Amino acid sequence: MDVLSRYEPLIDDFAAFEAACERPLPSVVRVNGIKATPGRARTALDAEGIEHEPCGWHPGLLELDTDHPGRTWGAFHGWLHGQEEVSALPATVCDPEPGERVWAACAAPGGKDRNLGRLSALRFNAERLGVTSMAVTNRDARNYSLNPFDFDEFDRALCDVPCSCEGTIRKNPDAPEQWSLGYLDEIASTQEAILRRAIQTTRPGGTVVYSTCTFAPEENEAVLDRALDREDCSSGRASASIRACGEPSGSIPT
Amino acid sequence: MSEPSDGLAENHGSRFDRLPATPAEREVAGRATREAVLDFWDERYGIDPSVFADYSFWEKGSRKLWAFRGAIDSPIAIESLGITFLRTRQEHWKPTTDAVQRFGRHATRNVLTLSREAARRFVAGEDQAIEWDGDWGYLIVAHDLAGEREPLGVGLYLHGELRSQIPKGRRRELEGVDVDEP
Ligand SMILES: C[S@@+](CC[C@H](N)C(=O)[O-])C[C@H]1O[C@@H](n2cnc3c(N)ncnc32)[C@H](O)[C@@H]1O
Image (cartoon, rainbow over the protein chains, first blue to last red):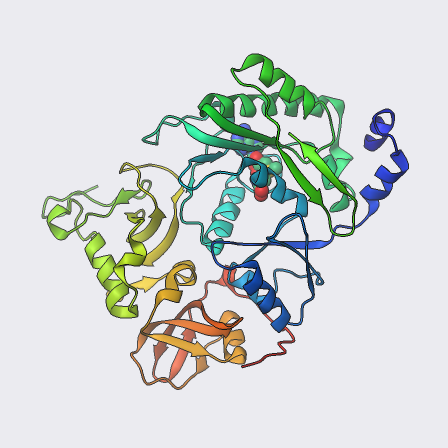
């Protein structure tokens, strides 16, 4: 079954959607504010002769004219971190204040399974970027215990949950190949458990952000509906006006 | 595990213990103190102790120290806490690449600033002959980038040679165009 054709009844201009899915992803980096300002990072790129264009909606995002953003002085110094433009959205919406405690429930980069390799990748990135205020634990977020810590709630939580990754189709055209309705059911119950645990561990009045890289309503709206029903919380409204380089602007309610 | 002869406990490999403030508060034999760590950065690199005012220092594993921005109860058994920043196993303490990249811009001593070409060789992991009439041992190695000095990592300077200490996973071959080669 063609994964995306499921969405035909839901999308007004389906041809435009398909065309968007086929457009290649630009090479985007995020400037790491711990180590450099966007201005200094851009001056360093100029010195290397690498063209760059700010992504407009987010002052720290730059589109680079190179296929190897990792092979720059900025990347070596941890001033730049390669990431997809939309990956900056969850943190922008989460928007923690200085001094707040944030739980990144699924902080390890990449795929669906939990494994130690992902944990070392997370640590490697964090150290290169100079993130000194982070504590890393290796636990299942579905029944996460705050036991090792001397506090019993978070101010905010970010659930960048494992998912069917339909939305990574621009980066990796074969992404949806292992896709099945059975998988959606299975992953949705993991997602719901992670989100509910995040709500339970967040203080009253705190903020929980849920993000996936999939279009599937089973993994998005349906998971939120169940969590809203079953936990003591309500949905909030946040809007980030995202305007991808060279693409029309839109606004994402959460 | 056998007790060291002075009756102090041993260092633990699977949890983080906060460094004692001074030798008088030490409970684990040979563990560095916060005071000694601050003195080290100050004496060796001229980094003022106030730079670390908001940081707590921790040990996990054999004489590997970590810097965490914030306070949390000690001990704590987790995967990581802040960043690794100093190895104290040998007689000469050795800062990590990540610590030097994070805190090295405050240094005023024992900083060796390289030309762009020498910096390229340094981050590729090469050893090179360099003139330097300062101290030998572990230096903060830097270059000028976008108008200011920026630390690259740690170099071991001995007998006219600078040995790159950039760990394998952090080495890069950077062959940019560099229009403003210093
Ligand atoms: C979409 S990725 C997160 C990407 C990450 N936030 C980033 O920006 O690089 C989802 C991650 O959740 C992890 N994961 C899967 N099941 C989990 C669980 N039950 N508890 C915690 N993490 C889990 C996976 O290993 C994967 O690394």
